[in-house]
Figure 1 (cartoon, rainbow, N blue to C red):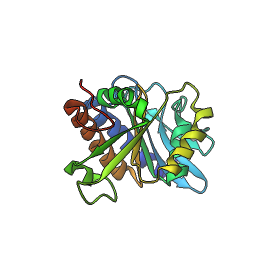
Figure 2 (cartoon, rainbow, N blue to C red):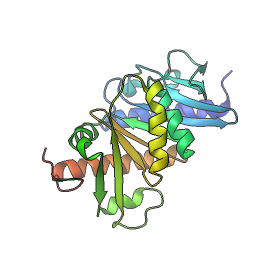
Figure 3 (cartoon, one colour):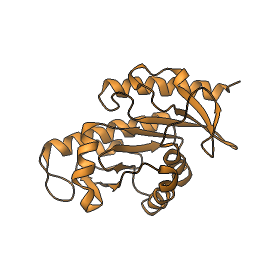
Length: 213
């Protein structure tokens, strides 16, 4: 039987998935969301592979262990489960969110050559945990996409430890990853970063070099 913490997390993840779909950040079956429901042993609630986020319900959220194996629920965990586990381990995150929005996809490609995207000078940056001024410079690393994240997750975990100040990262031509100590914080970071990515994309004035849509 699924635990009460899992059932609660599954319901909140489903609600968040439908919200993100409504904003155009996870159209079709794109994107994946997770939340830690237990640390000892490690257990995550995570969206099932192929789930339509616009119709996401509790049944499309699985419980997995620290090795990415399904503990309860039907279906397969997201193909990027190992990335979620890497973020949880590297950052102690309580929730990890991944979107495929148009702006995160476009900017991840436009700034891949620089290794990342710098965002600075915007009041909205103060919505990120630990940031108290618009003068903050947020660096979003860009990593190459992969069809084998089980093998590639270790390098992502190293990158996250080398960039302890980052609140997210981009996968080239793929989208945004962000996280938080809990789902509420992760959801706030998602809204803030998606807003900033759209502003940067529309203005073409920030980051490493100038880019126009």
